[in-house]
Length: 216
Ligand SMILES: [Zn+2]
Ligand SMILES: [Zn+2]
Image (tube, rainbow, N blue to C red; front, side, top):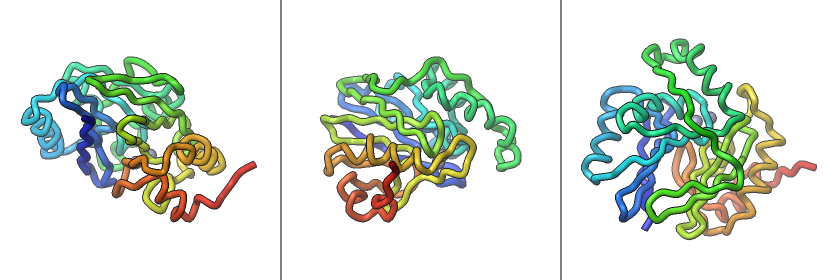
């Protein structure tokens, strides 16, 4: 059975996620760990549960989601996968990390790319990759239809949506992604966002103030 473990890291209160199941295989998504105690919290969880790290994934490459990329890659000798359209976003992080208070940021390069409509698998789990641009140009979400779990990144939050004023962001594109890719999923799908508490597709369809906005 799929297990979802959420850690809240760095001053942006970013949700770092570890997915694993009974096979003990796991993937790490958006490692935002920067300080030593954050890195230790992550590695201790993996050690105590006897997990084997199979992949490192980024939903998108804003600084708060990639601070621990290099640490995870080196610690677990694992490969990093992102969407191609966020590669320039990832590359730009080094240029502004110090100004954001992360002078020790260590950049990591991707080893492969995530393609819309394809799957990633680990253990007994399968997640489809959904391309959901708007908050970031190469933003993806990961959907497990059996477990009814969506790892959504910064697209859809409880009662809110991702900001669209950063480079490569676009409000209409974001709304379109939500309506066409997320609100077409079943209502009882649990959404784990990049910040804040989990929610469901059904709850957001009913309550999200941005839900009524449509594009043409
Ligand atoms: Zn973001
Ligand atoms: Zn974020």
